[in-house]
Image (cartoon, rainbow, N blue to C red; front, side):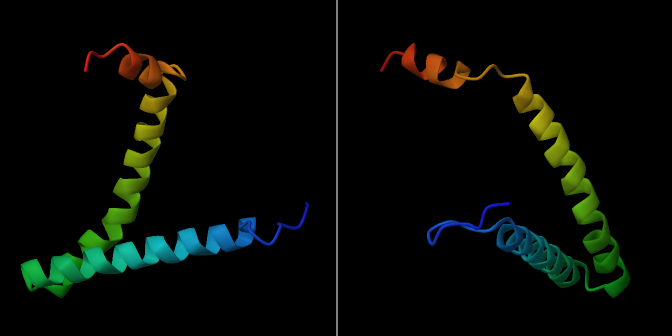
Length: 82
């Protein structure tokens, strides 16, 4: 593996940023659920389900986009009047 240049992220730094962002998002969801419900058990359940549900949704989103031919959006925009 080549070392990243001074202006590029390493794969490890990107991975750590992604993991820390996901943790922050899950903690935020859990806290918001607690504020709304006032129940710690419910908020922990929601916080635990959230990453699982979002992972499945991300996968389905990626698969849906995989069906869109590359360049289709640009062609659509190019052919739209306005």
